[in-house]
Amino acid sequence: MISRQFELKVFKRKGDEMGLAFSEQPSKSDKNVKGTNRKEIKIWGFPFKVMTETLLKTLKRQGYRPTALSLKRKDPFILDEISGVRLGLFFFALKPLRKVSRMEDIITGIDRMSDEEAYYWYAKCTNGSNSQRSRKALRILLAGE
Image (cartoon, rainbow, N blue to C red; front, side):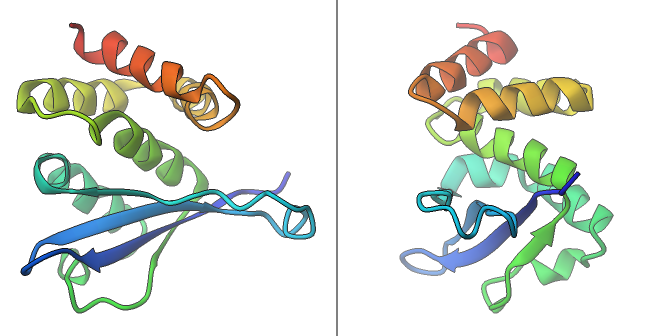
């Protein structure tokens, strides 16, 4: 079984505000198939600030130092499959939100998910024409409202 690889890139927004861009890299067997590139999803502002602690834990598990997360970083962070899946769920679920309490509930919910559940929701949130509905369903499941 071929494991997927994920990238996390740091980018600069207006002023000195930091943002992150998350993307799944196509596997070697998919590179020859047209249309397999996944688009990036970017996050900044309050959602980024709320998930910083979880993000730093994830990067530490991947062998990166917390100080590596800075605007000076040029190389992307490379993430293994399960860390990338969970981080992707954070990005999909948190990006459109503004209420910090809902963001915190979602972070807690995703952290408590089993690996299989995280894979299920990631697949639902990334594939097909119902991906937007699936993202909304995930937010409702984990944070109500």
